[in-house]
Length: 263
Image (cartoon, rainbow, N blue to C red; front, side, top):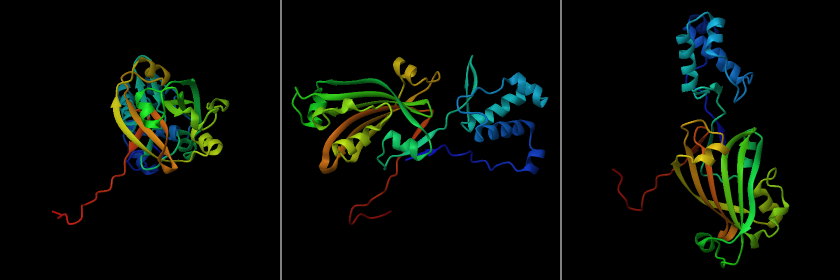
């Protein structure tokens, strides 16, 4: 499940507090209100410091202080030489739920879409042959897509599936359709569970380009093996998320062996 970025832990400023708050805080609150009301949309460039200095009759240092408040709240991001922009909504995924990217985005009121980079058949590599339990001549699908929420690139996703489970998969438009929905509705492959590994990494040049990442950004890499009912192996997945827009939350339960003492 995806959860919109939590609001700043600081309580909302009341009208009486606004009158006595430092001017930098009032500027930050004004801009924050415009962001929350979507007067300033994600990705929009904020007014130049000089313009805000004139509007509020303050120094540039005061405006920078206000921008610092918004940046720490992850509401804006600064890109040297380009300006200051409204940050896309950061999203969080609870790892104990298995949903497709499209399902996650729709559940939070967003609009999912894709850019298809590759959709082809090829021979499986050794790891794929072992996981899918297929001979070398048995082909697999490879599907690589850029996944977007509200037209903002969020992830680079690669999926590998055995062709014998979905032989004519290429007749479906995976730019607009959910892969998991197609597997379930057209092939009776009801995905049941997955095993995922997560790690942090530095993006390569291609990843930076297709994800439109700011300089110095990192990525969260999730490697996935997905199964249908009866432990049927269906997919090997690799998803590379922009770390500045995505957080994985893992729910852990502590268990004790029978007879173990608790100290």
